[in-house]
Image 1 (cartoon, one colour):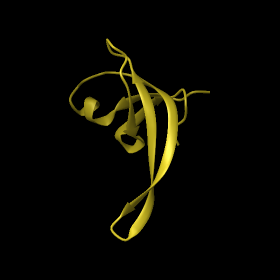
Image 2: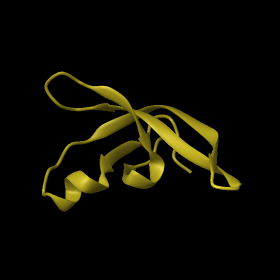
Image 3: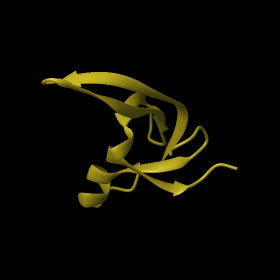
Image 4: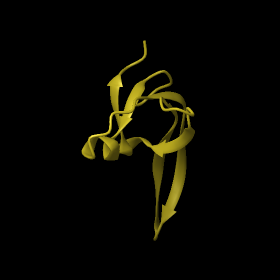
Length: 70
């Protein structure tokens, strides 16, 4: 499970050869209804280490933890 303080990269960025590290600021889980079922969606709010330090919510399965917080 991803947690606050973890350092992450985006899977899609890695596939394209882009190296940008982000810091997990917050995590949440939401119940999502699809068709006739309900499942949980896990998300992380990430601040990226680029020029303007953008912040946004990402599905955790689209991220890879490269260093866990203690």
